[in-house]
Length: 79
Image (tube, rainbow, N blue to C red; front, side, top):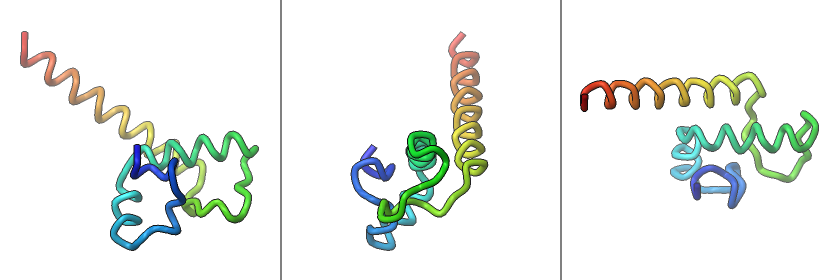
């Protein structure tokens, strides 16, 4: 949660934290939520990622599919 950009802006962090935040799928979910709340246009001064809505949705969907595949694999091994 702390590395998702919800608590502090992504672009105003150190380079190490910025790199970690770009790898976190929750960062893209937070950016998509901000985009939805602001009507598709991001106001300046938020320090947000320079991503598109398509990229945000693609990252979140890919992460959800990967988690579902991992969960089904784990459940099938236990039975």
